[in-house]
Length: 82
Image (cartoon, rainbow, N blue to C red):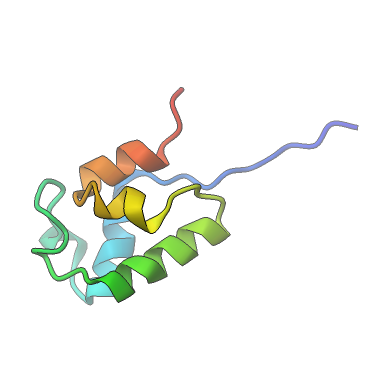
């Protein structure tokens, strides 16, 4: 019996939306290149994102994301190599 595994798609659009949600802003107001701390993301909000993404199968830690504080860098971490 073959079992198909489905992994969430952590696309850049998805990450922008998730970050916009925790910052209570519109996705168009979230920069892909600017440090997310400068955009208002704090450690509590970061932890809530990590917990949400881990529940969906992401293998990232607080340190992984904190050391790479832009959405473009997060997309690289969360998107498995083809």
